[in-house]
Length: 133
Image 1 (cartoon, rainbow, N blue to C red):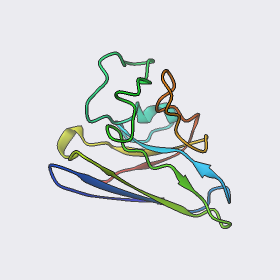
Image 2: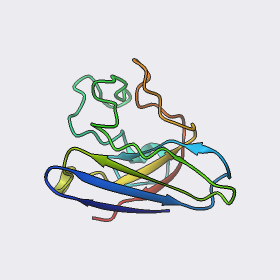
Image 3: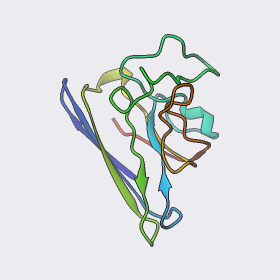
Image 4: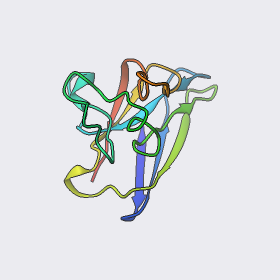
């Protein structure tokens, strides 16, 4: 897995490339606030530009006003017959300094849910990549 992050104060482009996953299927992937660790939960919740005030430990944001691809970095992708794929997300905010996301997590579901009460959810955590700053 590899990620590149390019941006300014006004926008950011994240490109995510994977190999070795199951062929011909979708995966949801998102930027997360913490680095990868010994368990999937170590990466913490999704990175949000404007943080959901109702979210907290054990209560991830699922409000579509906050859990959406304009406020988070969603990198849902489709793998090819060899299990490789890539995705690019462009978001209308800059990510720099201490508040920048620390990892990208690949989730088990084929895409990110968008409905009220489920927005941003994507199943278990299958893989994690630390973002180098």
